[in-house]
Amino acid sequence: MVLRRVSVAGRRVLHMEASPAPRTASLSPSRAADFMQCPLLYRFRVIDRLPEEPSAAATRGTVVHAVLERVFDAPAAQRSARRARSMVVQEWERLLARRPELASLFADEPAEAGATAAADATEGAGDEPAVGASPEAAARLARWLTDAEELVERWFTLEDPTRLEPAEREMWVETKLDSGLRLRGVIDRVDIAPTGEVRIVDYKTGKAPRPEYAGDALFQMTFYALVVWRLKGVLPRRLQLVYLGSGDVRHYDPVEADLLAVERKLLALWEAIREATETGDWRPRRTKLCGWCSYRSICPEFGGTPPPYPLLVQDTLPLVDAGAGPAADAAGTASGSAADTPAEPAGETAVETPAGVPAGGARQAPEGA
Ligand code: SF4
Image (cartoon, rainbow, N blue to C red; front, side):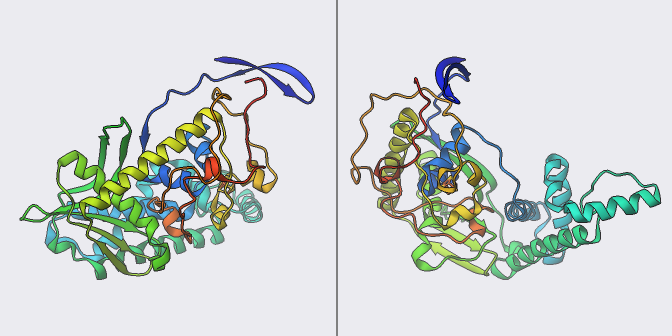
């Protein structure tokens, strides 16, 4: 624990805080994308580890990904759309058993719960709210399941699983760069041709982005390609994005220079994160993606106040001048989450944000640090 002297309601008091978290120099595409989208969002998720409300879109993505992984458990001839569709409810129930809090996504609204409770009281039934307990809640769950089934079914129009034997599914990968930075993540599917050529496949439950926003997803794929290249010594031949929401398949065939560029970009990004961690200077970056942020109530951009920064702040670190930060030209998206939201480009200024946004951002260093 660390003791700090802080001001609370105008009085100086001693405040006991958790010890600084050990710095784990590792980065996943999702967290890299968080920082590029908004440094304060990264802080809330990675440093403060604040919980988030479950999202129906992200949960649907998890269920769909589980079905597309398990569909390959069956012999090739049995991998039909009908069978896969029937697996959606099964995977939802399996997920719900692991994460019962997801029931809140389809629990009764207060008014519905009141009506249900009144009905239960007259019938002597229990008063525990359940998933889909009222007709309205049950209809919401049914619609959500149908949406997931349609996404699964659409996949069969884009790829033919009877002709595929993936080398890996939901493959955990991790590698350490020469700089010491670890890159990690989960690849949806890896196919290896008889010639040894590697194809990395990622499923998105959202729609294919417009070309000007395609860099986000491409960043995630080149991130994975870099990890595989460093890990196995094989340059992936093809990166394939399968957009189930719109029924599109996008390909990209990377060359060595692409992966070296993404490696430089990640090192620059990590340097920006390191500096923000040490200075406590996690500035919010307001974009239309804020509409999907769980932390609006504690975000200064929306009138909120973040909790005290839980790490020691090094005030002696110089701030970098605006525009002097490292550059990055794309942001990644997490499967099943940001993929379902409208994206906007995280342009050249994205990684510069910790030091490059105008004064008046949200520096939250605890007093007396
Ligand atoms: S609401 Fe927007 S600006 Fe605030 S933390 Fe979330 S993403 Fe960042």
